[in-house]
Length: 400
Image 1 (cartoon, one colour):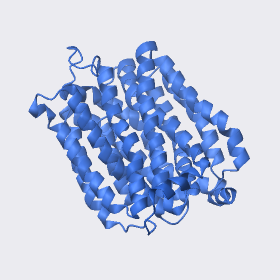
Image 2 (cartoon, rainbow, N blue to C red):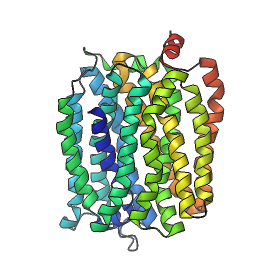
Image 3 (cartoon, rainbow, N blue to C red):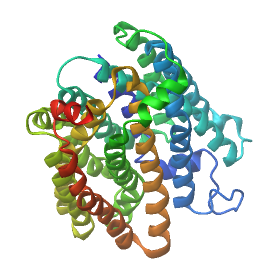
């Protein structure tokens, strides 16, 4: 049930990506008229529309997590975030009917929608952390939901865009209304008892090893943000693909990324987190470079499949490491911190990837992003070996 909620939130988000350029145009981004500093080109308008949502994620994800841990409740906050996020999506869909909202106003609506949606997403993942069992398996379930939501959201969003550029917004709003009802069927297993905000943050501060999964989460999400914006436009320009074809090519990554999350998470429970995270990230960065050098659509699709398999190896192990390290009463803030790092990563993918691609071309943009993934794997090897960051048992012993 929790995985279904995570799926719905990510599915609704990814519906917008394949047709992002036509969507911002329908929302009033006049890329040729100079009416907005945020819409000077098609790439700029698309970039700022995506950045607005993730900027809100960065600001509000920790607020949702702290509020949940302080009150010892998850469900009311998820319902509130989902329903308010639905209102945000539907308000964006209504913008063309109003006809007088500048693009800056559209971006403000996007910020409000993102601020609400991140609460539903992050706290549902925290509810998965509250479950008993192997952390790798539980985070693998979250990873399957994330991957399937993205894998299906991209191609279906591309098809919806061909019908109407605003259709993805309407479908996203309806789905979040369903999320608000669905989550009420799940028992709230948050640790009982209220905690002071200062004590909560101090507890997280005393666990500096959380910075390791946060760093990997940042870089991994940076690559995802890069493909969502720059990769989408690169595929359309290099291979002359429309939104539907682009969505299918993106799905070549997200399908294996989704389907392999649970077994890869279970694998990390058995062999520890070091090999999946470090070796997987190293190979992942090399595979990203392979996508750019692929000369044809079939070879690019094959490279995207390889990227998806390696992403499935890294993702659940990284999220499980957060669960291994966080104290029971600090999971909301700990997962909020991970999603904060991830949201900053998405922002970095949009801004760094978009800026480098605009100034120097797609080749250097792929090199920068793939190189960052390789670099973090190499730099953190000594840290993993020194701290023996393995499975749940090893991490708890090390923390003690």
